[in-house]
Each structure stands twice: as structure tokens, then as C-alpha cells.
Picture 1 (cartoon, each protein chain N blue to C red):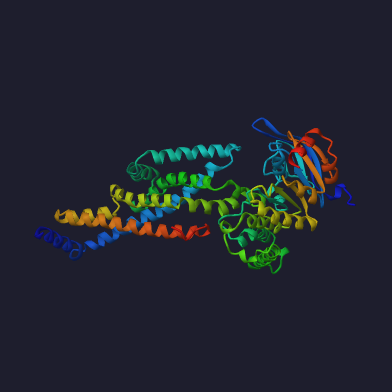
Picture 2 (picture 1 turned 180 degrees about the vertical axis):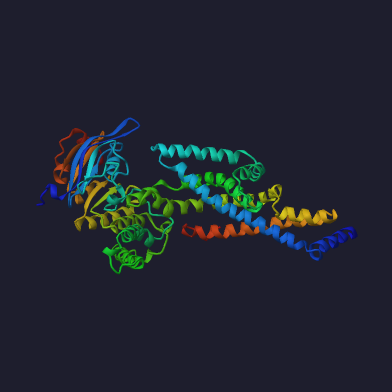
Length: 239
Length: 265
């Protein structure tokens, strides 16, 4: 026990007296930034891809666009995120002559990656909505896109919210790899604290706990959102 | 007696054909539907009557043939079909109320959307009109319609809490809110419990009595006889016989129709 108390003291020393909390706060912020903005970008890209894939196939342009989307999804689902991150940050960006911070680069890669997954989730969600909803909108003289965005997509999102929450949680945890391109995230920050005095137990246990707390908070928020969106269903009070 | 002239012809269907994967569902149908007519389509299942109805507003694109509505061939793929559908109400077997919208939102959604788009395009034509005003006006109109069917207190509930009969009556009102020139009914009572069929049919009858032009696909023979001004019997993708209800039911000529009536009456 004495040993652990001593380790705790050492950690507090690094964390507070040596200003380690600044590093951790910065890391926490970056982790949240990458996950949240990554999901937002992913939602937008994913929705667009799912729309393209669901377009009526009698036009040649729709078929070609569908093929392009298939390649995109195949690449981002088929390779590890670390590989995509390394490729993006050390190969593609320098080749294009673009210099951006590793956090921004991570956000972009996370967005692109999550877009591939969200597109399939969203496609499933849209297909799960009764086709009669689209028919009713079109019969009233609304356009395909108006009906899609006012009627079908809101119902699809309600249906896929639990899966989408899953995707977001995965994204939060996957941020722990951005250290590969030199971005300071939560994992990096605690690694840095630990390397200060080579005491790993306390910082790494706390790190794990923080991840769990973040995920729990987000799960709670998703649950509340789901409840709100289900207000149009019967038996909304029974759980 | 009403005059049937080209001036008051609402829908002119010419040589309409529809194929699904090479299988011919509608085989060269031609007919005219005049202002104020209540055309009832009956026939055995698989006869193409629903497909025919759905072709009238191009929910199914005809394989060939033309459909003139307001003098425009809406079967032509180059025509902006949405503009014409705004003047053609449609009521479905499965009601198809928007599940994510309240009853009131269901009714005003399309009229508000269409009028907003029109306002944006042509501001000078409507001096003093704002989006807010449009919404207010459409709400007022929706409440009047809901009053007519006695469902005003349901304005703010979601469709999931309504009975089938209530849903279908609201679906009819939703179509009426667009002030259509013609209403298409696709088996409006087939998904209803028996005790709810009456309320829906009586609403359709009330709309009919106000002079609305209608095309109704139904299995309710009594209703067809009561409301219809012309009955079409469809089988094998063709109109086999058409006549006013009296003659149609009392003096059928086509053998297929005789067999059909002997089974259902």
C-alpha cells in the first residue's frame, strides 16, 4: 500500500506541480475535437454517399457516381485507420504541398473514415423507412430531395441512432492512435506524464478511467436524444 | 345532364401501356375522365387496376402512351411532374401519413412548401405575403378541414396514436389541402377494420358530393354503385366494360364481368 501511495504522490507531483494538467487538458480537448468533428464530417459524407447509392439507377451518371462511392468505401473500410492516418499525413499532404497541424489532419482522416461506415449505416436506415412515405411525398408534388430530407432521412436517423452512437464511441476510442502523427491526445498526454518518472500504474489507470467516463457521458447523451426522437411513437412511456 | 366535351376533360389517357420486366400489366388503355366524374374501377386482383391508377399521376412511369392533364402530356419524362402532381390528390391503401410529423404538420407540409417556393420565385406577384403568413393561412385552412372530419383535437398528435379510420380520413384531408383538380383513391378502405370502413367511405362521398372529380379503385361494390357515375371493369390489363352503375350492375354484358359480379355480389 505504501508503494501505491508513493506512486500516487509522484503522479500528483507531475500532474499539478510540474503543470502536467495542461498537457492532459490539451490532450482531452484534442481527443474530443477529433471525435466530434470527425463524426460531423463523417455524417455529412456518409449521408451524401448513401444518397448517391440510393439514387434511381436509370441514369448513367448515377451508376458512375455509385461506383466511385464503392471504391471510397472499400478503401476506408479495408485499411486500418493508422495506415490511413500515416498515408494522409506523411504521404498525401506533403505530395499536395499542404501544411496543416496534425490535429486538423486527424480530424479530416477520421471524418473520411467514419464517412465510409456512416454511409452504410445511413443506407440501411433509409431502406428501413416504409417506401410509402416517399410515395406520399411525391404524390403531393414534393420533389425527391424535399421528401428525402423532410420525411425519410429524419425517420432513418431515428432508426439508426443506436448504431450511430456505436460508431461515435468507436471514433472516440480510436483517437488514441493520433499520436502516430504527433498529435497530442489523451493517450499521448498520459504517456508523456508517465515517461517523466517511469511510473506507469497511476497515469495509465486514470487514463483508462477517463476514456470510460467520456464514453459513458456520450452514451447517456445518445440515449436522451433517442428518447426525444421517439416521441412520435406509440407507447413512448413504456421501456 | 353534364356535357362531356374536350374543354372539361381533366385526364385524357391515350394508348397507355405498362410493363414490368417484360410482363405486360396494362395493355393499350385509352379513356377520358371529365370534370365532376366519379370513375370507379373494379376488377379481380392482378387485373392492373392499381397500376392503372398509379400511372395516372406517374407514380409508375408508363412504358408507352400518353396522359394529358391540363393539356400537358405528363407521361413525357421531360415534364416537371411535381407541378402537376400538386393538382392531383392521391390516397393510399396504407394511408402513408408522415410518421415524423404531427397531424397538422402532415396537412400543411406540402401546401406551405409549394407556396413558399412560389413566393421565393415571384416576390412581386404577392405583395405583403410572408412565409409566416403562409403558415398561418394554411394552418387556418387545415383546422377548417379537421373540423369537417371532427378531428380538430388530434391536430398535435402523431399518426402512430390514431386508428386506421382516423389516419385515412386525415390522409384524404391532406390531399384536399392542396386543392386538387382530381382525387385518386387506391383501395382506400382495404386496410381498414370493418367498423372503420363506413366513416372513410362517408367522407369520400361527402367530397364527391361537393363536385370533386375522382378515380377510385375499390372492392366495395355498394359504394361503387352509390358514388360512381361510371364504373370500369378491368381484367388482363384492359378495360373490359364501362357503363353507368345502374346498367353496369343490372345488365352486364361481358362474360368476365358477369362471373366476377356473381362472385362478389
